[in-house]
Image 1 (cartoon, helix red, strand yellow):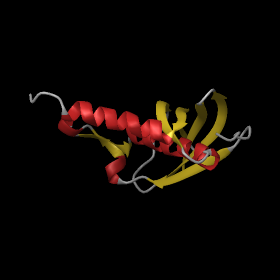
Image 2 (cartoon, helix red, strand yellow; image 1 turned 90 degrees about the vertical axis):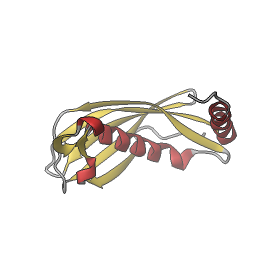
Image 3 (cartoon, helix red, strand yellow; image 1 turned 45 degrees about the vertical axis):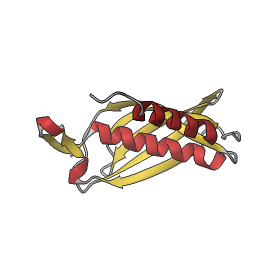
Length: 140
């Protein structure tokens, strides 16, 4: 992993769709606004943009934590911009702070993401092990 410069930022801009509004599946639709779980997804995507330019050949990143505080709303059709800022590197853990703003300029959320940078082969081996365990389980 190359050194990430202090204060390095990346942005992700999305347009809120009806699919991104609160829908709890078996409990149904609730609020016609940007859902917290979509914000978490967009935080993780923006955090990944922080590490991609600095990965060495053979390295990969895997998300390990997303913290989201959702403070205001965005409606379908509105743009939301997530700004990810490199905060620190703890060993192979990369922590980035996140701020989400709707197109009216309202801060609608903030939080952090953590990604672990590992050899891609190690990440893939972990998935292969899980697949093998799952395939070998007894039928329900």
